[in-house]
Image (cartoon, rainbow, N blue to C red):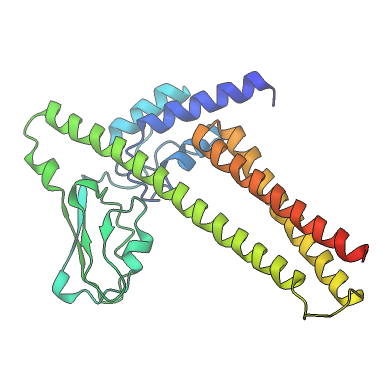
Length: 265
């Protein structure tokens, strides 16, 4: 793919993503609205978004120069999740499932939905072990009495859904990187740790070689994440990935220095 083709593809993905409702519900078969936009560019059908309805299919057809086709599933009006708090056992499964971090709570504590931020994706319902979550018509949608008011609500929901989903994905990625880097650091510390007075030998050297290998793997993963972020053109993801590359590089330098020290002892 040439640079021009890559830019054109990225621009079309952005345009398609802008037309999707940003409920992040996965009913299209993809793990979110942007992945669905990417799949459409790669040939996926344009009629797999029930929350978007027929209007979204029409707009996607115009963008992709395809024929308008009927929705694969019935259109869905805006919903909101509602937790029957008296029945909630505080398992946090709904919190983990929510793609936009719209549920508050903690382990063994009552959970509650942030109504204004809920996209009605339904992903919190299935994991609930006590079936205490209902899906109701969204009050803001029901309160909209004109087409203009309904359009304004949908635009606001899309903007919030996109932003909160992106923020959640970045948080999860950051937490995953931090946990992985901490594991790598612990491994290096364990490999470097030796009993007082012990002399360097085959065992310590092997440990440090393993630490170097682990650090090299961490750096490769970080570079892969950076390359992916650059292909997507996501400035925030690029900055985060570059920071991870820098951190992994320092970790590798430390591991190699420790190996050199024990080898020359």
